[in-house]
Length: 82
Image (cartoon, helix red, strand yellow):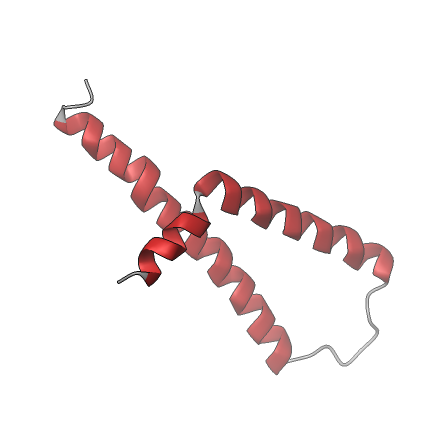
């Protein structure tokens, strides 16, 4: 079964292309939000730490799971070798 064209195509879409798009989207959105906030900071009242701390923990844990499950570290090291 692993020698069929359908298997290889499905594996490529799931494990290669899918992960590249997934990581690019998450990291791109994070970068976009940081750049946007840096260029246009809020001028009004600041949010309380009670809201920012859980949001930061949630974002950090989500990014950690994405990196571990998706193998981002091995993908980056493979890309850097070219």
